[in-house]
Length: 433
Ligand SMILES: Cc1cc2nc3c(=O)[nH]c(=O)nc-3n(C[C@H](O)[C@H](O)[C@H](O)COP(=O)(O)OP(=O)(O)OC[C@H]3O[C@@H](n4cnc5c(N)ncnc54)[C@H](O)[C@@H]3O)c2cc1C
Image (cartoon, rainbow, N blue to C red; front, side, top):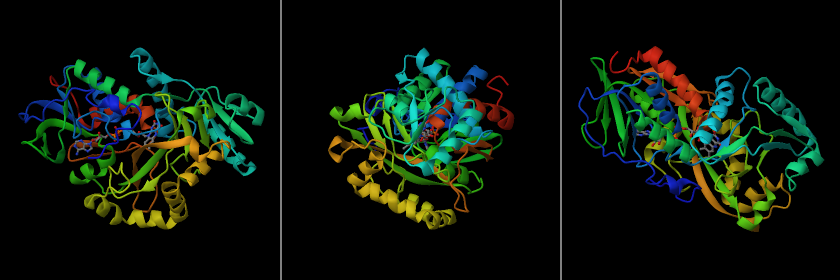
């Protein structure tokens, strides 16, 4: 597994959570196993332990640390809820999740900042889409939104240029790996167990019990299971007999970062007006809680679900991507966008040029290498990019099939929704029930 240790905050995650040796557990040991110690799985386990105190819960992850994949490799932005279709689950959970996350970070002294962001229209042709974002943001209940002209934009971001912008003071940044570590401590404090370094390879259900096969040992048994497996979510669901649609296709996001003496070019968060057809927000310039300023991410389809290095390819992952009918349909429709993303990958100048649309002073000599993250993009059989949360019930377990951005922002609210579904659909009653 090639995890990139250069990510801001990632070093701190190493060794940050207690490693519990992969043990074989007798069949009546757990009421619930949550597979995936990313921010979503941890928030879910914590929420269920709140609602069902005394329930015997284990959170399992194949990695030696919590938050090792998407949770630890992202832009670190607390989204306010501007982009999402009014009435969608994504919109509701983002607005609710951001509010809870700010409170949680404040309560536990986790690094965060309500630094605000600007979404910048560089050309008049983008103004219609900026209007639509403003409409959506207001409909979603995002507070403080304000339309800016060029001079007002310059007051907030002196090095940024545009014909107009939307300012969102509620958008901010947080140390998501630290949030995951704190959630893991909450789980343990409520009697849950963290089983790290345990790779779940399959499951079957018999006589009211879910048996999880693991790479080492005899596996785990529980009355119920919830899978929050991120980049591997579809594989676990298919193994349990769920509909193969949608499939996870990995998209690698490369970041650059500003050299320390160029950080003055960006005060907080500068975003483009995104293409409404795509779930990606476009390369942006984002201040990070570590003090870094990140540029990116790009979004390139890659050959491994853990392709933190671009050359990293896994046969199984590539086969899963290439044999899925949706992949070809996706590529046919978006080949031009794909070429643009490849250009960003091979040419630092092209990457910097994309960001210099917003900050014209930016030059290649202002940047250095950053890190990469891999996004779990759910792709439908018809080639659609699935944009909202997807859950399915299969083999007596609940599967979170798609938890796209802004799921790090929304995690505490998503945890509540999953907990409610688990109680209703799995009949989770706790050890005494
Ligand atoms: C480049 C990038 C930028 C992003 N920017 C933002 C942002 O600024 N703000 C925001 O809110 N969101 C952002 N996101 C989205 C956000 O990071 C994710 O939506 C969120 O972290 C998903 O959390 P998760 O717990 O579902 O998945 P993950 O964090 O990926 O966790 C899943 C876990 O499951 C484990 N697992 C999987 N299969 C198995 C198995 N078989 N056995 C044992 N363990 C298993 C994995 O090891 C992993 O730890 C971004 C994502 C990316 C990739």
